[in-house]
Image (tube, rainbow, N blue to C red; front, side, top):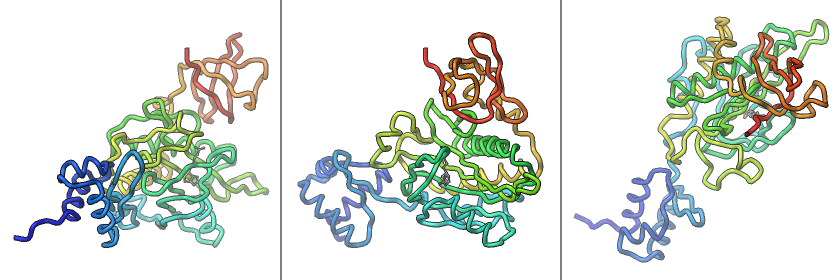
Length: 331
Ligand code: BTN
């Protein structure tokens, strides 16, 4: 029998550590060879076509295709209602919301799901940048034609938040919370955000279409999160290992739960309230938010049927916020 070369032994070690980093020093120790021999082995593997990431102070990681996003992979896990939706999957786009809008403006009357492995110009609410690196997140947009008035659009965001949390519970067994109106929190960190965009008919104030964009951090990017979001950004999974089919399953579960609520007019506000991260907490109301400028701190008492946040200021005054931002007060 032919003895394994250093290159093959390096490959086996990398495979044993699927998608977690292992240092060159550790590989060298396990194989009783020098770090230079490991380095040469890694280069030979790359020449053979293996994708191996190298990050300083972390080591090497074999890029696994295990959690690859594909249209067939997503379809395999879809519920009945969601099967009718057209699915488009890309490696990289500017923003999946843009591609979904192009689809709608091209005259298609079919509901569409656009998914991408990465986004070069992902955006969040208030024009903020949404970090969308390759391989570690799920970036998806749904193009739909809801027969509602523009004032009711916030309800679509709430329905989506419920679909996202239900899907996360189902496929990953985690129990995330919803921070009014569009953020998903897990272990006190933001793991997902929702951006609903649309166009209104000037004639009757109804929505012509809506694009529901969902961005989720499943795994920590190998280079970590950018400095600006490091403090608040979290991930669904913490040990770095990619899970087979997870993004396809999660995407399919979100679409299935959403379509079920949307077409079958399912109840979602009760779940939205139950999963609320804010009800019962003291918050600081962002000064840019509507409402009196002289009052800042308030208790969140509920969420009404129009998705408004019900608050009570320290002086007893009650208010209902339509939009804006609040942050939880730490004591
Ligand atoms: C937010 O946190 O304010 C909302 C983030 C929404 C991000 C998603 S990722 C898919 C879709 N495409 C975008 O450009 N944005 C949304």
